[in-house]
Length: 216
Image (cartoon, rainbow, N blue to C red; front, side, top):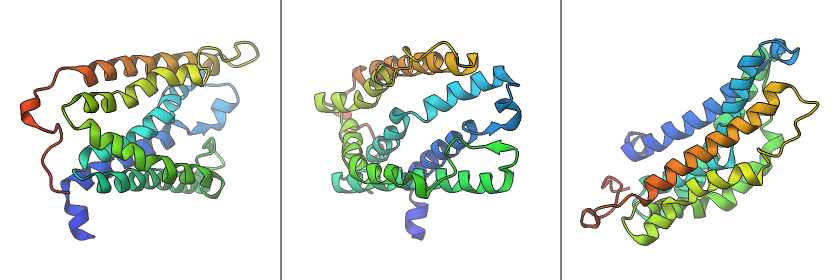
């Protein structure tokens, strides 16, 4: 375990898991004053960011990133699962602790219920192994690698339309809720376009894989 903790690959994966889990908790925190209709500008900003960070694209990207950093396909497959499950675990445990400590002031929009979200752990176990392999392939400067690198950006482009960000009901909802749907959709599309441009940017095939040559 000590060797694993000191491995720069696994440390970088752990940092991404922690960042996604904690940022998602932070921006899903709703104060009682916000629920009473105050701080609507902050509510708009918070919800816009929360909807991006909580998107399927970002969470799938955790598994893809893990596979990207790992140099063997079997390890990348398992790494995608481990990274995703660890991110979910951190997210819900931290949310549960914060809810226990500050629940009278802060509401956590479902991020405090570990047992009630076991379906997401099952989904991670089933789907994130293949996503780890996508990340492993994405590190190769080849045509197949370019296709793999497009998976997450294309997901970001499609998700706002699949999830109805641009067709959400407009009337009868607070303006912060309404406009955060549109804003998060625009942000995902913008990130997707930048991601596709990066994925298709010409690579020098003579330099082998795009990842650093760690042995893990």
